[in-house]
Image (cartoon, rainbow, N blue to C red; front, side, top):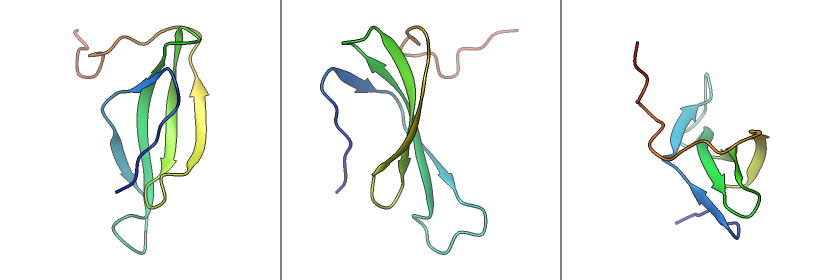
Length: 74
């Protein structure tokens, strides 16, 4: 079992993105939008799928609400 943890942070639904031409089933990254309650904003977290080591994050200038996934309307 692997897990990611940071105080005051609440990850949303993770999504696995396989690496093109990957060599095994864990070859890719896991993406999750995370609410940072301490800083009152969100970020996109990028984890190595095999080790769960953080490989990057993209910080949003605001909070992205929970449940945002799949709620687009035209």
